[in-house]
Image (cartoon, rainbow, N blue to C red):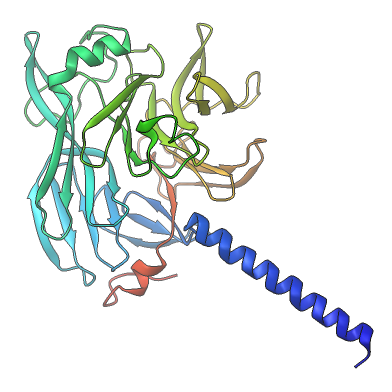
Length: 364
């Protein structure tokens, strides 16, 4: 072999090994490398073809092949063979969140209290041990109701509160706040300056203008006002690795003008908007007043759900370029549009599927 050819082959080998190493480091750093889309308890492959639909309105899929499922009135834990290990009565809504070590989970719940002459629903957050189902810790918004009002900048008004409580098995009609999401805070650049942003803490969307920060034991650390609207103005809050606040703003208001639905990245040091979609003066208009979820992906793209024309989701970059867009596969019989859903996530379920036992699912 000539020296030139040998040099060429060595160079190509070096480049390939370097590229492979970089990819491994990149994937290891982010620890994601997505394999599926998840909508509630439904799993889709990356072409958005259904893989399996589990029971419940939201599920957590564990690396050992087991999973937690929740309905509006019950919690369930199934082993990797889909055998029920425990269940309990628990009235909940919206999101579940899994601890980093996959030993416990957090769930948003409901409480009912007499408040200024009416029976009113209040939000709670509860953590449970996954293996045993034992309650670990619990936090209620009821004891700090007036403190929450003062921070939000308004006094609770049952007539002004646009989102009255619709799921009312106890006959309760009114809703004090309305928590919409709970998310773990990742390692980020602002944690040293803002203790509430420490890795492993939780950020909760109070829906009605507030972001709440908790430690892993559900001790309230800090509260922050996002806007001064009493109606449910956002559904999803997350912290990025840069320490930004990522928000799904269902109806955004700027200079007394309503902008419709916007996805925003906010600088928490001064509450300024770093980025938003659609941009100001854009011809694109979103109108997902009822619900929505957002996720910052490992390649800096942003995944979000949309209900402007029925249930759909998009993957975009920060320039607004659309890379992937699909509508929900089922049609609503009333609207004749794709069924609306709240949140979508891209997840890595390699270990979950690897450790499943039996053939109770369709694998991609």
